[in-house]
Length: 61
Image 1: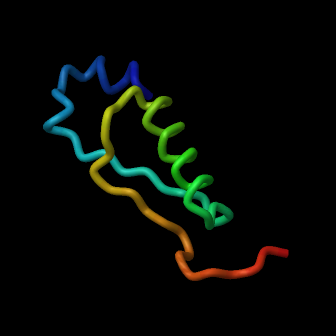
Image 2: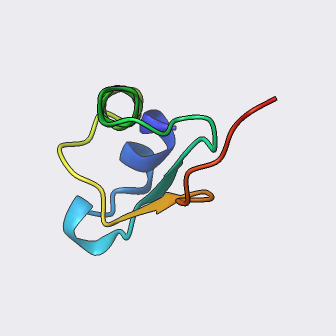
């Protein structure tokens, strides 16, 4: 993905980047790790929008 973004020649400020947290990630540490991993994979310093699936507590299983 990073290669594609860089290949466009569009500056980061002109892009609106969105990602999401998996539905299973309900605690702070797991959510933070997921966000950090997304930023690393995308080679970005920030996201413009973060979607959280099913933010209400629920029991898996």
